[in-house]
Length: 349
Image 1 (tube, one colour):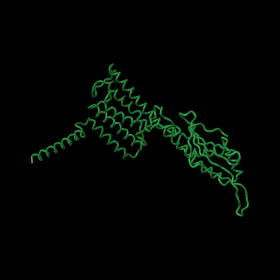
Image 2 (image 1 turned 45 degrees about the horizontal axis):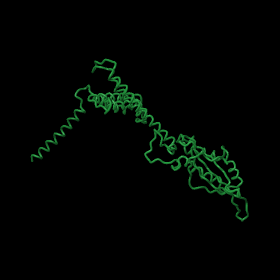
Image 3 (image 1 turned 30 degrees about the vertical axis):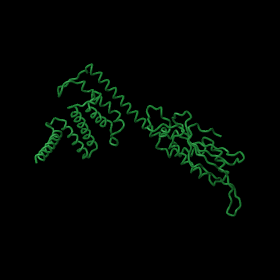
């Protein structure tokens, strides 16, 4: 029975300590305290959600942010905990994050890249501010930081700005990768900014760039429709004009690029060209039509790279329903997949 009694007493004391600590944390001992400011921020946000006027709503929400930042700064500076290896209090880091969200966030995206980038610098500036003042409460005077404090301030702010620069570099590279995904097809082993965790690959064995493949996959069915079972004289004119840079095939490729790659800035680095050659000198009417999607953007390979899908085009005799020959029609057969080449495209024939 004594064991049970001691267990119950200990349990009740543990719960009582938790409740007492919670009460001390939540209920201020005096009106002028950090808890009051936090409660005012919560009250302001509740009232702003009920405000009918957009101006009034934003003014109340603005006050709520100020109360939250002031209350958090007050609470975290009462018993400051320093970030290991630095002179920056953890409270300044939290306050700096709130200031960044407040100053650079927006309703659509509070956690935006600007807030993250300026967070370390804001925290360093908040850490340095107390060094320019002396005194407590309402009796505060400005001062020039002591020589030993100046060095710490300069090092802290400079290192925090360096971290901000690296964060900015991350967001820039991340945006490049999103807008120019074909860059990841390249050899990035020597890059200081982009690190791949997968084993290094040779450029010639890499997977085919997705956007380059999309262009050919959309282009080939259209070309087949325009050539297959069409009069041979009409198709032969298309093939002879395909070598020109402003040919119908190139224009069709540009329209496909603008449509299919509308969400990517890299669309300006892709172009479509065609190569037409006779397969056999003894059969001059049998042509090889090569459709190329060519990348002209940045590349570690001086020769750039391109994708190719080849088709064979030849005439076949066409007969009417009565069996008499009425002319020749075109027949086209294309490869089932695209081929990737880390080289300059072949010259026009």
